Image (cartoon, rainbow, N blue to C red; front, side, top):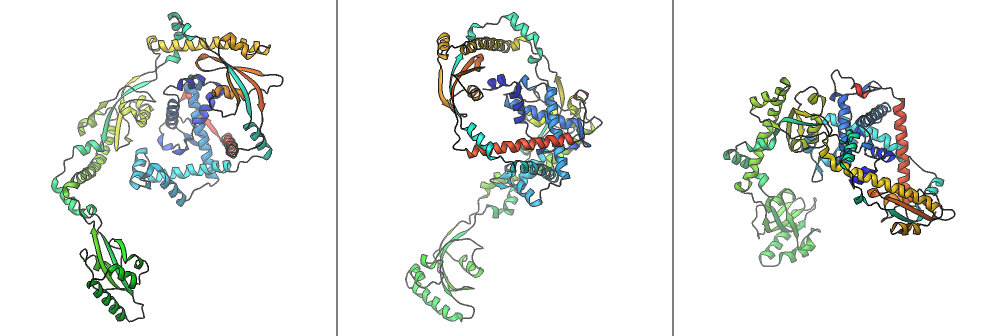
Length: 626
């Protein structure tokens, strides 16, 4: 499938794909503090600079998305590196122009809304709830302080207000909706016939393969690659080297016994004789005492509760209160209940509600886990605390040393007894080992590493890992040897020749069809079966998408069927016969109409963005000068 996508990525399709995957760079902003130095800015928008590092980072992210979309290989038809970098720079210019406009127009979000947005982000949640530790950890891994992140979020959401406002106010008039409905509900009667090339008969020779190889060397150029030296610090590795004394573990256990003790739950029943504030309590005490004597004499507690208890919530259930934990009942009731043994009947107990008789039915919970059962957890907890303290100090020490001696990692490694490791070769978009991390690849191909030969700053990764890197070896982009790409070239030649043969045959067939030959006559000549789809809708399943799309762009038949052709998969060529068109102005698809309005709103927003960019004072540095 990916190969088919690559084969078809040409012309407007290529630019369409670029548009679709060009998500705004506004999520994290274009922080000018990431750049600096004496280098010329890539562009200046109303006095605000876009640094070369801003552009490099945005471009690396853009290439990575393209590469993932096309299975690791970016088609040439999307443009050269300079073209793609220009597109990325244009997006950054648009973003800054938009941000400046929203700031000037006082687009804002309040503290309450900002708090709601942050707490609703899945990346900051644990078990569906916002987690402050995860929030701070994620921000550290991105190089943000909470204040810096919140400022960026305010800016990006202010820009979103303009976009959502334009899109939400888009509308269509009834005439356009009627036309859209008519076209959307339209069905077309089609048949197709495919000319299939015998690719096995196409056998490129060695000379032809070499000629193609020499004629377009850039097509077979390997990506620029690097190997890096790196020092990796991780919380897990530090934890493994820490020994914890059993005495310290037991002391922690004693300090936190309550955390390992389950809540005690008591199942109880009661009989209540109420006493109002202005009443004498003695008659109620006499009644509850008489009831107690009857229970002691052998009468059933539940029956007496149903007959005499004045608690409407429990009387009908024989006085049952269900399970009771500490802190639920008023203090005199709780004190009596939690001093009883299971099966015991209390003396009359006075509370603000009146006089109670309490029966303790059962006791559960209250058990404390043994030291041996929680010892591994406590050891890990102590190791983690000690390791966190150590790793922060260690990272700071390494950072100071690699900054003070920026041309080598060796002094830091020797002084702090650390190991320098070396990665395998990797390029900008993929790698193995430490290079599987996109942050590492991004820094490895930065100007500081490649051109200036400096040590990197600390790179924070997931799972509490920090790495420092420097260039070990650079392998420039180069044309791959012929023997490495020979099969690729052979496949390309076969596909090109097959397509050329099928297009020639298809164009000749179209001329014959227009001169009066029928599709059935042509099928007999080609010894191929006709695919008769009958009337199809625009989203019809079971029809080749290219054939379906072309059939709905063909002219309506006036006097007899009309024919068109197009290249399809595997170098073949399809002839389409359109014989009838039916329009249906009836049922409007509300979902499709909503999408139409959204699309119009999106187009209006893009127009507004272009206007803002055109109004801005933009000075660009030619990319070749950067």
